[in-house]
Length: 81
Image (cartoon, rainbow, N blue to C red; front, side):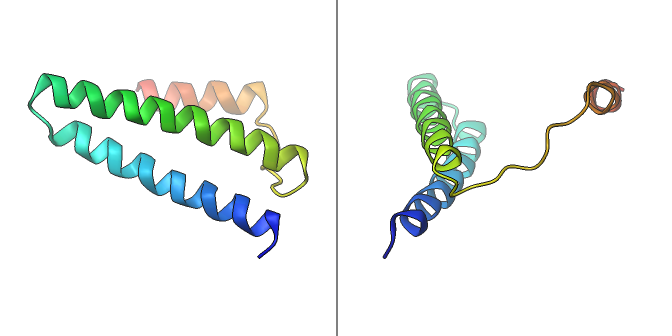
């Protein structure tokens, strides 16, 4: 198994974990447990972004092109409406 495959596999697994944490957070009434899930999610998001930067640097992942300022403004307007 090559490094590129492993990095992309970990990124996919991390993305799945983030979805699981989001679900658990929204369904947890206990404040302490909810906070624990939020801290785990935050740590997972940081890890995912750090690994993403490595993958991008090594050419393992090519993100979509950057959105223009006009596209960003349009999406903001649609979401806020």
